[in-house]
Image (cartoon, rainbow, N blue to C red; front, side, top):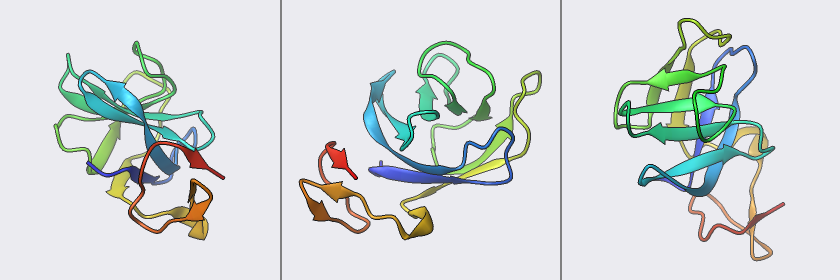
Length: 117
């Protein structure tokens, strides 16, 4: 698993952006968008990856990928308020952003969890 992923697409609401490792959930890392508003989370009971606005529960809106593989296309939840198809790719920082780790700029290989801007 990568230390960060990028979500792209024309999504309503806008869940696009860079997601960084923030902890573990259901035995796998979960990822939080840098503003803390969206999460990329493994849902072990359903065996799928989800993009949603919280870590636990069935928060709307959500996008889901019925696969153990995090990379790929995510479908909008049929009865929810999510619109559009999301795509998750590994490690492509948007807007040429480069996080700081322990005060040093890093490229595509992030170390540790202490991301500081």
